[in-house]
Structure formats: C-alpha cells, structure tokens
Length: 117
Image 1 (cartoon, rainbow, N blue to C red):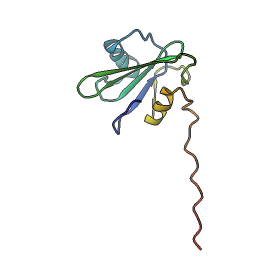
Image 2: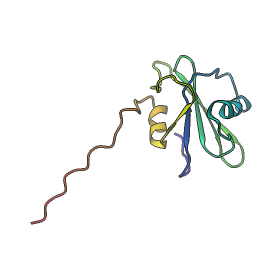
Image 3: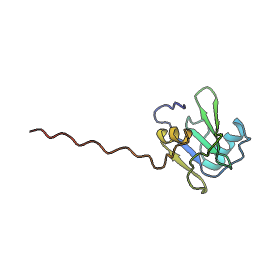
Image 4: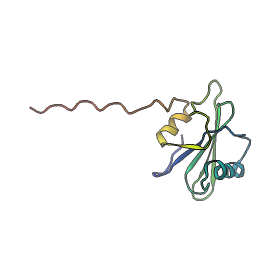
C-alpha cells in the first residue's frame, strides 16, 4: 500500500518505458515525459511494455523512494497509450496497484434520505 500526503498529485506516464531504469533514469523520465520536477513531492508512475509491471517514483522530503510491482498472472488496467501523461486520484492509484479496473469505479449513489413526517 502506498500512503500519500494530502495534496499529493499522481502522474501516470501513458507510454510504456524501459523499466530497467532506476532512480536517476526515472527522475529523468519525469522531466522528459511528464514535464515535472521529480523532487516536487508528487508521485510519478510508469508502466512496462507488457503491462504487468510498474514503477513509481516519489520524493518524501529526504530522498527518492522507488516502488515496483510485477503481476504474475495478469496485467494492470492501463489507460490508452497516448503521448504525455494523465493524472490519477490517490484512490485510483490504489485500485491500479491492486490490478482492479480503476476507470469504472465510481462512488455509489447516496441512499435516499428518510422523510420526516
């Protein structure tokens, strides 16, 4: 589980990249692909070519943190492959990391309010 501070944005690079990159390589990709500062405190997520592997990069104030996950039997649900990046909510990030379809998850409708008589 990834715990993010309130106000932290999640950026997802939509194009697959070579995930052999480590801290410095991913920080460079943040600048090139997303156009953001890797030391901003936001969370940056990258996907592998096959769709079963992801890496995340996050500056926690004292250093860069690297998160990686590979699925053994399935693939993550990714947005369409387009140029640039997209943003996710922390809730969508949590669903994506759990390999759930984060695109179709919506809040359930509020239950009807009881009528006061």
